[in-house]
Length: 406
Image (cartoon, rainbow, N blue to C red; front, side):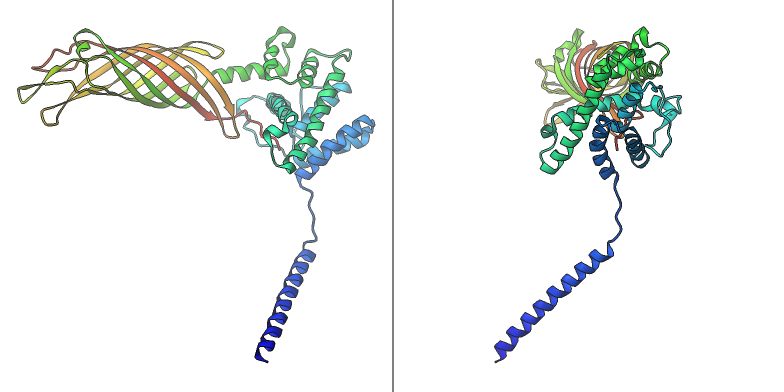
């Protein structure tokens, strides 16, 4: 009897809990009556509506959708690109886009323009190429099916924009800037931006901002970090110590053509020859060698073309080596190091993200080092040295040109 009562009790308890859960869920769902269309929803629908309305020539509805998209989602690249192409088609294109709505916050101190077109057009053009590549190869970038179908929808919109631009290339009466924009949008490629330096675009806002952009990007600046390796080659009587590989790193900064770094490196491997050192006037023979350099280096870029750069190098630092002998007794032989030489850099990559701009590079350096190790009572180590180095590093600075699409 007791067992039956317990079974009935637990059954009733279970029903009560389930009912309570259902009531709670229903109550919450009834409370959630407010709905808000997100910018994602607006953009997702707009990229479907605009091509259809354009083909159906429903201009009033098309204008309303475009303005609604801009007003609620800001001046994103997809809507600005269509606006530019549509204005070219309707003979209303001007090199300006008014900031009628709240858009992305951009530091305007790097461009003397208050107009949104001048401040952002290059970023829009670069993003159009990047966005087109994503949309044409969605499976390369996205594996999730939901993401894939969303991006595929945008891909149709980018196909529409490229087709629209291509259809307008033979339109009569186009200005040089309009021809360039149609040429670029029909087959986006960042390398085509270099065409803007041609005389045909003289006096245009597009050429002006392009040349200022190139000037800014050629003035590489910011924080620097590099790994270094190479070989130390002594000359004169110092050659007794033999050649030694070295490893190290540099950390510093750059402002346009001037570079300034703190350099740390150490040399290793035993000397190929015995040499004599003294301790308390007692001579000892050893082959042990461990060298160090800590210095302040300055470089100046005297020539640069495209990805290639040549620098004049000079530096001052503390140079020393250790000799170990006789039951692990260590002597350190320091010297002032004054050095000068030449460097060559090739820039490997340039990357933008939301906050920073980054340049990576490889560099070859050759320096002549003036040193004077005082090995009193031991082997004469007078002479100077060459260093031949390979550096892999990067410059990093705040990015004032990045456009983050919404």
